[in-house]
View 1: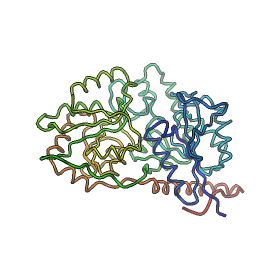
View 2: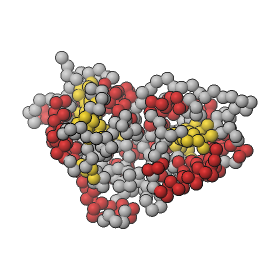
View 3: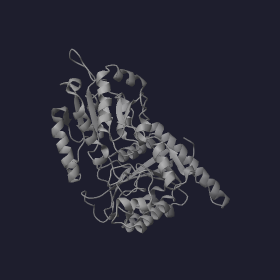
View 4: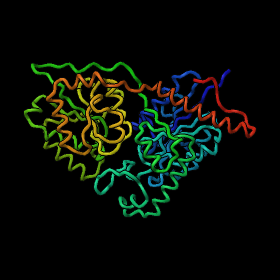
Length: 441
């Protein structure tokens, strides 16, 4: 009997506990892999406070699927991306992994887990292929991995210990150098890196990772039938419902969006247009940002409506009520899941003209671009689409289809097998048995 290709997908969070783009992407890959013949995927996700740890073991099931396990750890150093509790990695995680005997270990993040996990898995499974998918610039940038300068809010084009010290004067240049050397050294243990956007991949090459190790593979989603267009009513119906989906943070540009809405002349906006915000966590943001947001919200008045946080499973229902999706982020972004969702449901986008957003949303085809951080330029784009009643239909016709999670999984499997074949060729010359499972997928 042919042996299955066994894969361990490691994520920094489980989407049922921590709903974020990286969690959704990693879990979709896990589901896609298990949808392929002769492939078995197990999903290991990190959890921490406020979820309590179970008994003595750091591993928990929490009523998840049989092939999904949680790893509880809280002793994490955010600066060095380091897990101080290496004993839990060796005692619990590696013991679990040895029972699985994975051919592939695929990290979708080290946040909360620690870079030490890469070393531990490499040491325990030297003949397995180990990969890391990047979802932002956390290994490069200590400012939440956003590559935005703290003092000015300007985009950072190139990180260095000296430049990083400029953002964090209380942290010495030598300490930033230690962080860079440690992070790059641990990451280079991986056999390959995956980036959902070419833009992010180029940033990591510029930072010092080997270009031949980097592969661009788009995140896949569960592609089902898109919801129909919103039914228009009234004598002069317009596609005038704009929506924002995501967390409300300083980097996401929600303040830029609300400011833009307030700048639109009343005779163009009318009484029937609205900005619908689906997201939360404003209360967890810096007080200065909260105060700015509260003032902008008060100035915008009834033009803005807040609907609170949402679950990813609610997206089809929410998309039914909107016409346009706006992505106003002021940082480079990578591959926001909401782009895939908007493509699936045929909702044209208006997005910042930088990073992965500009790469994924083709200007004039999938949506429109505006100058990042400029409320006035965003307002001008909204005025354009409100004034041109045919723009929505034109864009909807030319929008591309999103990547589905099965095709994404197939592309990953091709890379996995290629890496394992390379390892086979190396180990055979050393007198070791080949490790490549068969048949090919």
